[in-house]
Image 1 (cartoon, rainbow, N blue to C red):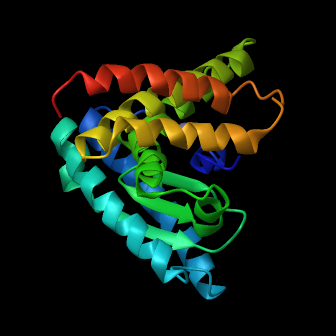
Image 2: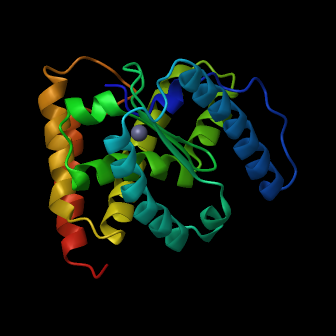
Length: 224
Ligand SMILES: [Zn+2]
């Protein structure tokens, strides 16, 4: 499953420690923006950028509500230069890089046959990674030159996936999507995943669907 492919991008080599958090955040976002521009330019050159207009309209329409919800939860995200594109490149899943740079593979949306609510969950999850500054935390952990580094990295990845599920569901719910459609996203993913293959950095779709059910029950009891 090619979700969260942002995690697979090359990590910046020993990015220097910035003294102020604001400066560090900005440098991190600028770096992500440069990486995103490169990816988007490459796809555009191959005629694979925003070439599926129906999916582009859906992804942009649903993203708008999620971006508003993100700014309610984390006001600084309201100042980000959000960008949302889709691609027919089958190797691309879905990701949102730091600073709100979103890319969604239309093949993934079609393969999972996602309805709007389910697409909101996918987008909410990816946007949550950026809102929670996940890749930066992963970068930090990769700099701990420790014997248990690999294990720690895998643990962090699982933790981040669970956190992105939780925050992402909250964003989608806040944006007006029913908690039930958030659960069905993971049910569809579980069907596609087939027998569990060992991947220590990703929780199984089945366990994520179970967790989504629990969160959905809690959300249903809360006002939006
Ligand atoms: Zn993820």
